[in-house]
Length: 366
Ligand code: NAD
Image 1 (cartoon, helix red, strand yellow):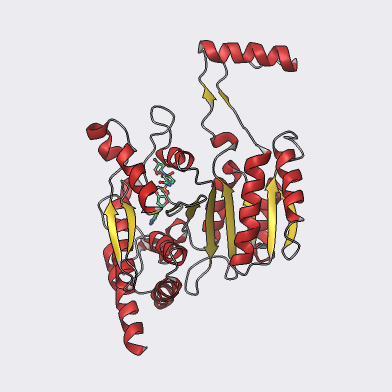
Image 2 (spheres, helix red, strand yellow):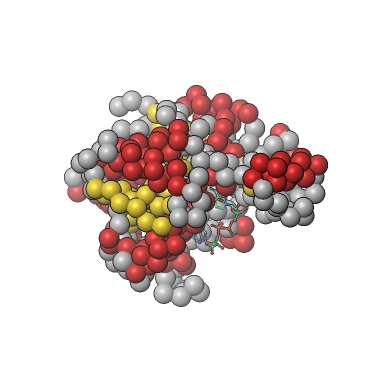
């Protein structure tokens, strides 16, 4: 069996615990992995002067596959998001976030199997921002007034929302191909083309053109506000949804909420030849170091990673083991119990123990 070398970035906050749990269950599938462990985030800033040191990026470029825990972004000032920077730096243009309901999960719904594919490089998350009051911002305000006839208030901060034909074609081609490769039948383009004609309008127009290249997949589109309502009312009508960066960020949390919450929502940041797997949730600092966070989102990200490296059988076995632990309902964290302070909830590492026991007993049965 071929050995895989994979970069493991534990992250910060609850990252250490959920990453360790994920690493243990991935190892328990029997796939031969050499973990290239690389620390990043808040805890390395003092040592390296940056939350994402160059040697971490080099490791991902070298190994082509990484799995990472969440990294904290201080809100409003200082560091821009390391996660967003990582995706841009490695041109991981597609973020695939499946949300699937597993029997036993407490949710208002029991029939959800959705996939959000989020464009990762453009839109309001492109990181092109102008701070209020700075000379460059005032100059931009003047330029816009001259070119467009509309004057932005002088005390404004400005974020730029680029949407290119190139990136839109690329994400929709990826989305349709992903749908084909994963046995899906429909792609929905999500947008706000009625209001932002030159960005979202372009997005929709390109989506419609790309859809013609994939006649075997059904295609439709939804305005984002309608989409949010429809997802809450009748999620079973949707399948794969391709959306710009900001809508993708918001709606993937909404979809996570349909299937039991952030503790169960995995993801894959994918580029042409590199993929970085991570849960949708963040570093939940208030739970850090307490062995209470749900590691299943990280484990399911590991499942996606196993399938990505061609270890489909191991990925399937891992998913089945997680599903069994969920269905039994005993070895699950607080967020999957009827009340948050349920005394029968178990810790992060005990969930890993239970999944490993399932993997081992399934191996014996075989
Ligand atoms: P969060 O996802 O960290 O936490 C929100 C809430 O969800 C938590 O308070 C907790 O109640 C629950 N939760 C999240 N993950 C859980 C888990 N595994 N098990 C059980 N409950 C869980 O979101 P936030 O509080 O908005 O962000 C905290 C930090 O994480 C911020 O700095 C943010 O920028 C960062 N973040 C990082 C990533 C990433 O690394 N990709 C993603 C989102 C947020």
